[in-house]
Image 1 (tube, rainbow, N blue to C red):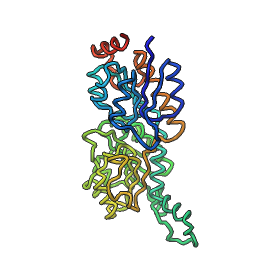
Image 2 (cartoon, helix red, strand yellow; image 1 turned 90 degrees about the vertical axis):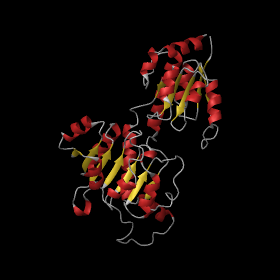
Image 3 (cartoon, rainbow, N blue to C red; image 1 turned 135 degrees about the horizontal axis):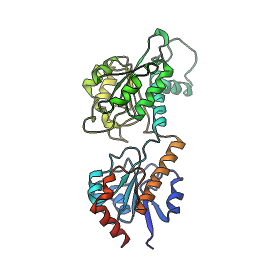
Image 4 (cartoon, rainbow, N blue to C red; image 1 turned 45 degrees about the horizontal axis):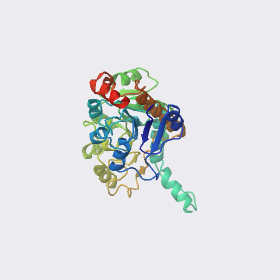
Length: 351
């Protein structure tokens, strides 16, 4: 019986490995250094020897990669998103692609709120001030930030949520505890907004993007990355926001024109920004790191141990399905299973 082989591009939580090995697969992990990814050639070399590729969102799985091995049976992406994979090419070639959806909603919503509170209340500079030994005397002007709750004015703050899918709605649910009003914009998901708007306890209302930008004290971005949402927040949109407003992005970096954001932060067009994702990740646009009104973290929205373990388990389970020729639980191109290209690929793999 032909040995099955899974190539994992980078290190993922160890809970995935027993699942793959119990299915009779040998496993190769391409990454040797936790801080270094793989070159395109290393990915190609790994794919050529694999039955299934288990990839991360940071690796471009292009048509060239997918075409490198006629016996490749599937791609199991360790991520909710899959825009790093050429799904169109995969479908044409008869290769199922899977992802790990649904598991990171709450964890990502929690991180969104950590960023909202962190940037508004200036937590990081206050921490740095403390550990540097600079705290000598309390004063009423020490690290003045913005309220998230009604606070000193007693006026409810407005949270604008762009993209009202599972994560956007979860962020809105948490806002109830801060007595906030919600403006929600998502032309592709009006039903979810309408459902929450029908509950007066949630304080949710649908709004157009321009109204949301003009009225919100916090703008939290949660859209999918599509050609329409790329740079949806640029110089014009930032100029619509309140001088006292904060921008939060935990979706995809290219949703924000980062060059325009750097200029807006320098010019105090908005009060601040908190980012988990970046346009040319892991790079930042010049000047962003020097913006004292920015809070920047390295794509850790799903970064809890439980959530990352669950993602690894889901990715491994999908990979086993790809190996066995069964429908993957989280396949993103299900039509591939009915294609002649898929049948031919399975036949070639078993020959």
